[in-house]
Image (cartoon, rainbow, N blue to C red; front, side, top):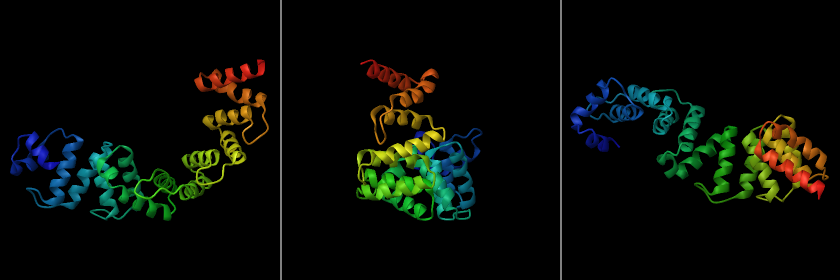
Length: 245
């Protein structure tokens, strides 16, 4: 990365650090390169504290590489106190943004999520479940994925609740159970989740895990349909057609 930028900016290595340091308007990549120079002592005296601050500025600008290197600082106590929760948050943001370093190192991702999950981090439990479900850095274990979704869902983590529903609906890692699918949709719908209300309507319309009740399905579809939700409008038409047929 540093070498490529030497060549791109036509700067000699001995001039590059001062060029970065003195730029009046710095971009995220400038802060990352500056952080590298300060971290490894490239044409300057190594300064971990200033390196940390440079990576922090790039991370604050939502740069995935900046987030990745700042995560490394927090995780390994480099110029800052160790903060595994902060490190996990930055690691996740970098991975979700498509940072090649984190995606390439899937085994590290799996290990990181495992440690955070053991510490009780709900998002880590959910993402560790995804690792097992999608074979990311580990062997595919649908039962393990289900157990992690269940743990996070019972603690109120919404994304895990939806993945848990998928497991029960299609029998992934657990026996198929439409009654539990219905109960989970009902719980989420009563909490005001519009997506769950639509899915609950499907349960009533098709008799999934409950007695078929088209009237209740129509009621659930009506409000979002009036608000312009195209899925609700489509489902509403299907209900009317089935009733008239």
